[in-house]
Amino acid sequence: MAQENEQENEQENIDGNEASNKDGRFAGNEDQRRPEQGPASPSSIAKLFDGCKVVLFDCDGVLVDSEPISLATLVDVLDHFGAPLSFREVADRFTGRSSSAPIDHIRSQTGTDISAEFKPFFYQKLFARYDTELAKISGIDLVLSALRSRDLAFCISSSSSVERLEKTMVVTGLGPWFSERIYSADFVKNGKPAPDLFLHACADMGFSPSSTIVIEDSVAGVTAAVSAGMKCIGFVGGGHYAGQETDATNRLYDAGADIVISDMTVLTAALAD
Image 1: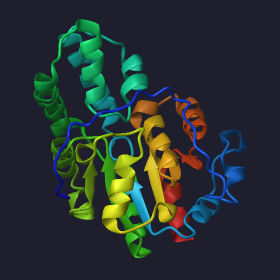
Image 2: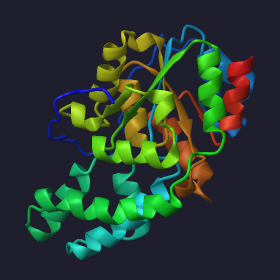
Image 3: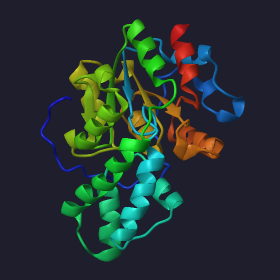
Image 4: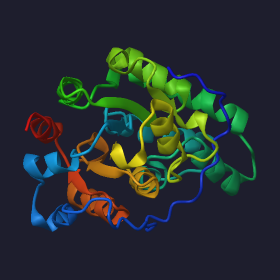
């Protein structure tokens, strides 16, 4: 895993409506930006990869189907600390965010700073469930293999902590795909929806934002990619979007995603074109 000095990750509030000017970045792709036009075809996705040199993957909800586990665990943890929210409220507020967001919520509701206690308590419960429940997103190994076959670089750029990413790599066996190319929100001051993490990963790997594609499942992540001047593919195939794919697709398009997909096989097909 890439080595950096870990810093406290301070995140801004998400209102779900942040937008950036994309003029000139993705000429020719405007016809794919609205979901009502139907599922994106492999050929339309393939066009996004023109000029692409590196792909930045979010982890939770993109590489691994961890969001239903982590959100359910977070519901229990918030209740334990006296700041309860429903599963849907937790999903809407914290998907794609670092642990600073629920810590801030607990502080605002209880007046207590539980920064030192939160991660150990949350991770104890979360990792116990990871050991028996965590699985890779279906088809992700084929996507990574296709990228390698095309000699395209790729990495992880995740809001998760180093500790959580390390656990994820061990449990799922994804570690060998990424080696040292794993970037955590621990490495930057401002996490998603700020662009800092994506810009840091891109620069560290020696690429420009204009040659980068981000694959994200959250509004915070898509917003960060757009702010960084990168192309973005939204993904709504994770378990946390089950039964809500259309609404999730609309939210990711509204946040600025160029194309949204719900199945990794279409991405593999696009890379084979």
